[in-house]
Image (cartoon, rainbow, N blue to C red; front, side, top):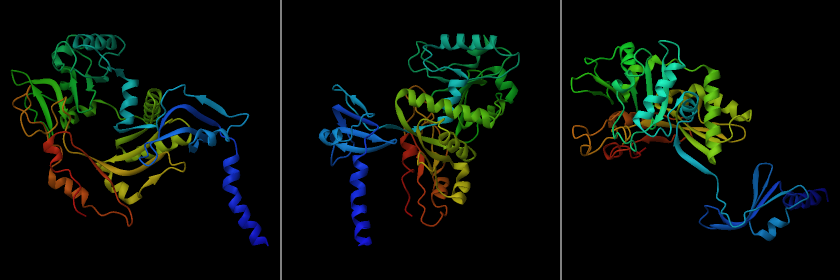
Length: 368
């Protein structure tokens, strides 16, 4: 008899749970499920932060209680949460917390933004900014050291392009970093030169390492603020998650803690930087208790970006006939990464960042 009662209780529990009122019910508009078998639904119900029903409105009505929030979409469409498949979360936060150049409409406006920042900065202090992109500027060109020197002759200035694959440095920054006409660009990088053979200010991809020492490493508190700010930016735009590419292994515990404390309002899927592959192999895949933070991939950089002419092309760039872009990782190096031993039962996704066709031609998944 006891076993019979336990069996009956087990059969009843799902229906009892389903009968509990939902916290939130949405209906009244087209609901897209991203499920090919059931592409649309009439209603969605949520309880305890979890979706408990996607289906008919009549069934969702049975989950409406006295405290249930009911949202009538009034014809508006409802979609599953959008996830950005490639971003650098800490960099987005750092952009917001430094000289934010996102949306700067022209080179002239960028120079004026730098002029204002110089007035707020101590003499000799390094000015760091990010987010400019020249493609729609009336000047139709990259900024140069000479442009920045007019308003910042003494303060070093480092301004990252929006794609994160290039920056412009002024002469004070180049001098402090020891970069001159004799400096050789590292493999996978380029130093743009002026007509006299001197650095023009633009450093592409791996050449950005030449001035990296001018920026102090963020403290744990500064890194936490950057991640938190980046998460807020994404949530404000309506994103629910991000694939965080090139995350330093040392930041993983911090990201998980911020999420656990409710300070990171989005889900994060981390792909660690290729330099941290050994650490990830040794530690194994990570998943936070609530499943919102997952780490089980490695980011490899094959080439650069099209806008900064770092993407490796088969033919020269139309506006730079002497360049076909840059390869940051040779095929044989990539195959070594992909052949590395893995923990038993673990499959490590390798996520090569390849923009140009030359980069893509060797970044397919190798045989295992």
